[in-house]
Image: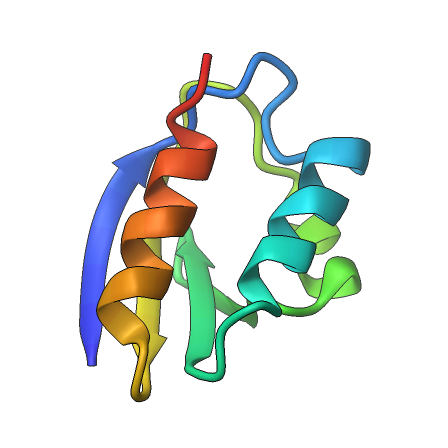
Amino acid sequence: MVEKTVTIELETGLQARPAAQFVQEANRYSSHIFLEKDGKKINAKSIMGLMSLAITKGETVTLIADGPDEEAALNHLISFVSKS
C-alpha cells in the first residue's frame, strides 16, 4: 500500500468533468484506489463518492493505492490532479 498527500491544482478542482475523467483514469488500474479528504475516505473509482467530497482547487487530499500496480496508479493520478 502506498499513499501520498497532494494539492489539487486543476482549475475547477475535481468537480463534474474532471471528476469523471479522474474516475475513468483510476479504473484503468487493478489496484484498490482511495481518496481521503478531511477524514472521509472514498473509493476513487466511484463518481458519486468523489463528487460527495466537493474537492476544489488548492485543497489537499491523500491518495491511497493498494495492489499490483499501486505505484503506477498513484503516480498517474497525482500527475492528473497536478495539471494546471
